[in-house]
Amino acid sequence: MPGPSAPDGVRTTASEARSTADAGRTDSDLARLEAGLDSLEAKPVVRDPAWRFLRRTLAPPLLGVLLVLTVWQTLHASGVVSEERLPGPGAIADSFRTLWLRGTLFEIIWTSLERGLLGFLASVAIGTPLGLIVARVPLVRAAVRPVLSGLQSLPSVAWVPAAVIWFGLTDGAMYTVILLGAVPSIAIGLVSGIDQVPPLYLRAGRTIGATGLRSARYILLPAALPGYTAGLKQGWAFSWRSLMATELIASSPELGIGLGRYLENSRESIDMPGVFLGILLILAVGILIDLLVFSPLERWVLRARGLA
Image (cartoon, rainbow, N blue to C red; front, side):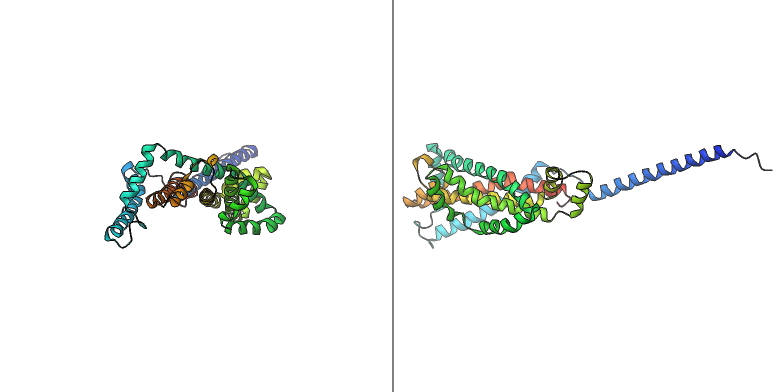
C-alpha cells in the first residue's frame, strides 16, 4: 500500500539538491581530469647529482679541447709547419704566464668584456621595442624589416670607418658599431618569435582586457620567448664580433688595450704566440658567456614549455 506522497515543495527542493550535488560532482570530476592531463604534460623535474651534471656539461668540452691540443702539438712536433707560423702550446702558455705576471691579463679581458656587455645591454634596450613595433605595425614592418635584414647581413667591420669619422677614436665609435651589428639581430629574432605566436593567444588576451602595452607585456613577449632568446644569443655574438673588429682597427691611448688591440699589437710585433693567445682568449670569453648566460636561459625557456 503506497505511503503518503511528499508535498510538491518538498519534491522540488529535493530535486534541486540532487541537481546541485550532480553539478558539484561534475565540477570535481572535471577538475581531477584537468589536473591529470596537466600532470601528463608536465615533465618531472629530476635533479642530477653534482658529479653527473659536471660530467655531462664539462667533460665533452674538455675532451674537445684535449683533442685540439693533441693535434696541435702533433703538428708542431712533426715540423710540418714552421715554428714562426705555428708555435707550440708551450709558447702560448709562456705568453699567458707573462701577461699574468705583469698583472695585465684581467685588465685586457675586462676592457673588452665591459664594452661588449654594455653595448649588448644597450642593443637589447633598443632592439626589443623596435622588434615589437616592427612585428605589430604593418606599415613599419613593410618599411623597416627589409632594412633590418640587410643590416643583419652586413659585416660589422664595414661600419668602423664611418663610426671613427663620426665619433673619432673613442668608445662612442665602438658602441656605435656594436649597436649597428646587434640591434638588427635582436629585433629580427623578436619579430620571428612573435610571428610564431598562435593568434588564439592574442584573441584570448583581448577578451580579458590585455591590449596595447599590457598585451606586449603579458601575451606577446612571454609567448615569443624562444625566438626572442635565439635573437638575444645571436645579438651577443654580433656584439662581440663587432667589438673585436673595431678594436683591431681603432687604436688610441684613450681606448686602452682590449683583446682586439692586444691581438693587433702582437701581429705588428710579429709575436705569433701572442697572436694565438689573443685568438684563444677571444674564443674563451665568447664560449664562457654562452655557457654561463645564454645556454641556461635557453634551457629554462624550453623546459618551461615542456620542450626540453
